[in-house]
Length: 159
Image (cartoon, rainbow, N blue to C red):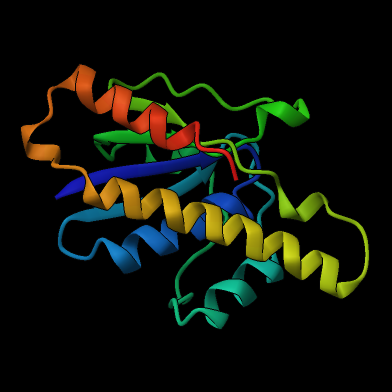
């Protein structure tokens, strides 16, 4: 079982979606958590709605600080902040293998209900594609450098 931390600043949208999706799709092979360096304290309703729309369980997910997970040994830490938008990603100092999968934050989208929903749908789809690629990796046969390269390639995909 591979322990994965999906990390962003607020832990209200993207990291929650990633945590729920990886737990949903990677059952038995992965265990995911999410956290934030400056958690908002609540999960964005749009994140819960998009997960429910796709049949992904949402019970038990909540916004938490990475300090609450300090005793959990992680194999992988994936940041999902969007550097292109000038959003600073938190730095994780543990020994886990780190990768960056920048996803635009749907919580910062202004507009109609349809435009906001579309932003959450886009974040969901990007995370789903990337998690599918993670699940397809032969983790047991990759050395650390090959895995780092593969994770970074997954994160560098263009939408």
